[in-house]
Length: 234
Image (cartoon, rainbow, N blue to C red; front, side, top):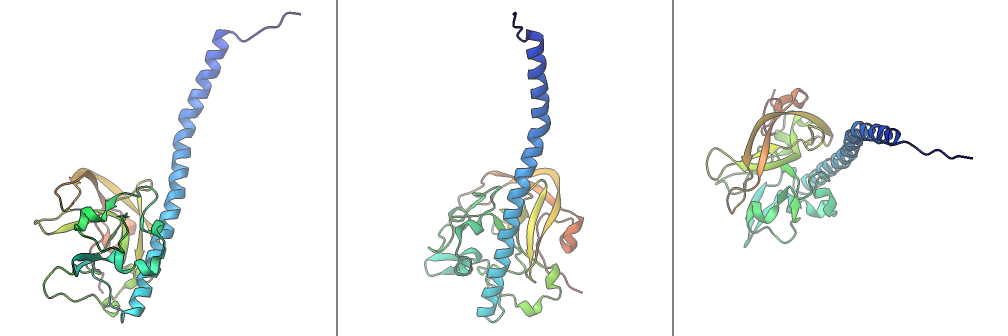
């Protein structure tokens, strides 16, 4: 009996079909993987909110400074809440685990600082302790805590003058970023690309380029901004 094999045309047709299916399915798989990373990141931001609330209970409801000198090193929000976190994986977003290197941002971070961080803080809630005559924000002063962002997926660029910094949002999850709020909840917020970029702030000079995004309409008080700065009021 004769045994017939596949012709060259048949093989090419099968290969073409496989290539088409791969082109269709690979983006779907990529988005599914990113959705899983987003869920992990959202869990991180919730745990950061819990750690911040635990800190508030121990320090008479006063928020920590975003950065301040502590002897010969710089204490940051990340280092002061670290005892309440106790898990180095919480400090980084799985979609960009090395987005910010603490030594590049502050020069001499204190020993209990995580080496990398992926989350920015609302500079109106976590005041910069290097400014003269500043006092920490009190939880009782937040009129709308459920609408006041504390920490979020972000990065840092230079502000309008040399010592100023802007904590821009970075929507790492299919054009969404995660944020937590002063009442302890966290949610996903949409963002839109402005098609502009700026270099990352580092103490050694301009760093890698970062895309600038605008907070979407479900960002509430922060909608239209490129960061989550400010405290909503009545």
